[in-house]
Amino acid sequence: MMAQISMSTADWVHLFVYYLTLSLMSVGGAIATAPDMHRHLVVDQGWLTDLQFNNSIAIAQSAPGPNVLFVALFGWNIGMNAAGNAPGGWMLGLLGLFVCLLGVLLPSSTLTWVAIRWAQRHRERRGLRAFRQGMAPLVVGLICSTGWVLAGSNGSILQAWPLWCVAAVTALIVWRTRLHLLWLLSIGAVLGALGVI
Image 1 (spheres, rainbow, N blue to C red):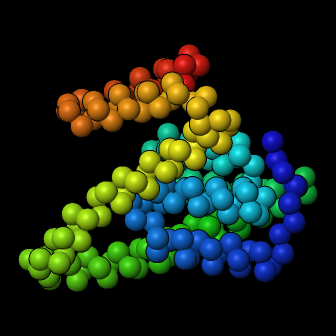
Image 2: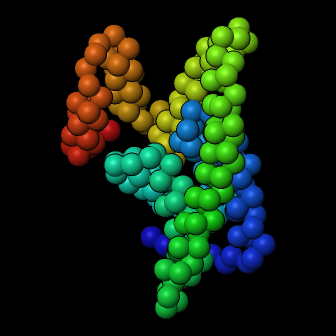
């Protein structure tokens, strides 16, 4: 379902700057910042619906390629919502796609390139090793918060108890076995198709 919105030039610039700043906080990948994207795009601005938000993430995560593709789908949906039923509305969809994707990729890619070059030259420093080890719990926490937002956006968090059980069992299997992740994704897909989660 498309939501009709109005986007001025200032709104497009605001969207670009939002993704520029968010990009620098996307430790663990863009998916780790999905809760803030939901807050900003769905709750605060109303540029996307909950359904568009969730579908964009689901489509991008199931498609081959980098997981940041959901940001491009957010931009596409924002542009299409701004176009409404106007002829050539796909042009605004493409504008939204490029605004969001360029905004999220430019700073993080530049920072990653500079940081990796520096880290390769100083890989034996104690502070650098400590930084790497300290980032792991932060990334896990950000990914868990993304799951929390996605599970609760269609109702109460407590109603999603089957989803939490599947997530806990999956985390345990990943931690304790060497079972390939594609098997776990397949099982999750079957459980979703059956309506269990």
